[in-house]
Every structure is written in C-alpha cells, then in structure tokens.
Amino acid sequence: MLPNPFTPVKPVPPERFVGRIYELAAACAQIGGRGHIAIWGGPGMGKRSLLEKLASPQTMEEHGLDPSRFVVVLLSCESIIPFTPYGFWEEVLKELQNKLDSEPELQVEIETLLGESRATKDSLRQVLRGLKKQNKFLLLLVDDFDDALRSNETYTEVEMAKFLSECRSLAVHSHESKYLSMIVTSRKRLNELSPTLNANASPWYNHYLFVHLQLFTEQEVDELLQPLTLKMTPELRKGISQMAGRHPALLQIAGFHLYNFFYKF
Image 1 (cartoon, helix red, strand yellow):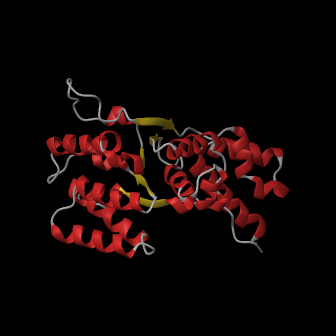
Image 2: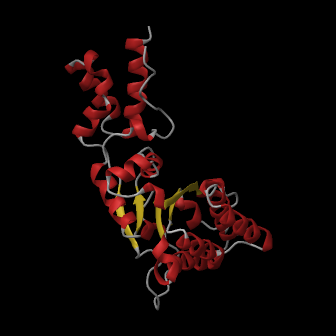
C-alpha cells in the first residue's frame, strides 16, 4: 500500500505540491530578474509550502532557471527569538555557510564575519560579492516576516524602521542587489503591517511584487483530491466541500483521514 499522499498540519513537500501555477510562474520570473516578492495569505493557505516548492531545483528548471547558479536559503523569522536585526542577519549567514560546501573559501569568510562582531546587512553584502565571483546568486526565502514587523523588548520601532530600510537598500540600491532575490511571506499585506512611514522617503516595501495566496480554485481542489478518485462519490465530494471548502490546509486534513479510512482499514 502506498504511503498516505496527504500532508496535514505541516508544509507539503515539493513533489506533492499542487496548483498555484500563476504564483509559481510569477515568482520564478521575479527570481530570474533578481526581483523581490511579498507573498501574503491567511493561515493554512500554503505560504511555507510555496517557498519550499520554489526552493526545489526541479521547479527552477521547469521555469527556465539554472539551479546550479542559486544558493537557496530558507528560514523563518519565528525561529529568531526574540527577533532582532542582528539575529536575522546572523541566521542568514549561518544558513548560507551550511549551503556552501562547494565553496570552502566563502565558508571561511562567513565564519570570520560571524566571529568579528554583530552581523549586519553589510556582512551579507560582503558574502554577495563573494557569490558574484563564483557567478552565483542568493535566493533568500523568508517565512513569517510578520515577526520582523512587531516590536519587542529588545527590538524597538526605531530599530524596526532601520532594519526595513536596510532590507530595501540591500535589495534596491546596493551594487550587490544584482546577486540577490528575496521572497517574504506574511499573513497580511505588508503595507497593512507597516510601522509609521517616513513621509520624505519611499515606502520600505515598494520594491516587492505582491502576490496574494487565496483559496484554491475548484480545479486545484480536484487535483489535490485526485488520490481519492476511485472512492469519490458526488455525496462525498459535496461533504468535503461543506466541511473544508477550498481551504488548502483543511483539504489536506480531510484527504488524510479519508485516505486512511478507505485504504488502510
């Protein structure tokens, strides 16, 4: 008996990912042009699953990108406790170091940067210059960016405004921006989470292409439920629609239980 193909309560692995054809195409087009994307959607819409799909070499190849030229770093702001800019840049550098086994000189350079002082955006700029020499690019995938937009005891709103400005500067104004594509996810659109804007400066988020993850289409629902096709009746399909609607996470849960019921007992 094949393993249960549904994935409840955790990200869907790339090989089982369904739908989101436009979103994937838009993201890969931005990545190819070293652009930046802000993906937003409510809980269970599949934001993390989409990031993991974008990190897949097969996805890149399918959209005309050469995965050998990208160093992919995927992290969550929720894992940086409490969130601070230093903690963020340090996490990025550590993840980069782990991905650069084929570039030992860059690994040593990152180790030096981590040991010198608190990591900053300039630390990452230096690493990006090293990637340039290897004809490579950084694809930085940041989940739960909401945490970077909430102050805490060690992260004031002033520090937040500075951090967001640094992210924009790195992505837009620095020479190293040619070797970086950054994709972030959040539950709400970034401008709805934004701290007070400086009326004399460009909004810190205006370099992102906004992509909204919404409920699945009926076609995407059918694709997701395809493993249940042999057992699917009109009554069962109606029941699933009533309980889960077109919500990706709820459909995964429903599919998981139904698959177990039909094929495991």
